Length: 218
Image (cartoon, rainbow, N blue to C red; front, side, top):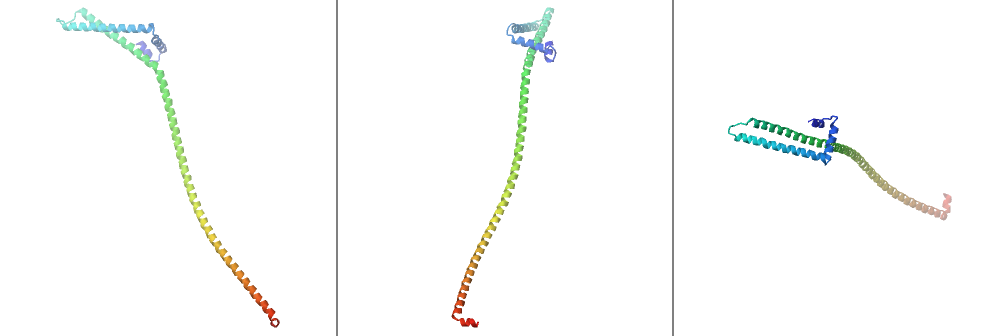
């Protein structure tokens, strides 16, 4: 019980007790052999006491006088006491072995828990980073969508302006064609006027030559 209490609580002798149990388990020579021999002996004594107690009990049932003599009473009490003590000792030995096993496995369990905790923290960090990246991508998507709408509206306005400019250019072209036609017509009229002027001048010159007296009278 003292050893169990030492293993259960953090006492000054806990580390020493664990080291002794380690050396006892790791040493496959005399120490472990002695423990096995003592445990086996206690188990055999326990079975012998069970058998003796069972025999006394069966004898009491088959006895016609109905009772045990003082010697049998003492033997029965001794058997019960030995069975109780040996059972408690074996239970305590098993408990010590289990406690030592769990205590030795505790550092690896703590390390596994720390590794799992670290991995969980890394997973949470990666999850947070992924959520932040998704939020950033969503914001960029909204920004790009806004820019796309703005560019579409600008494109539409530029297309409208281009159509308007094209219509104005077409109107100017038609107007310039009209001006060119008018200019050609005016050139033709001017040419006709010049021709008529020349004809009139030639006639006047001929008349002047053929009728000089008339010119003098004039």
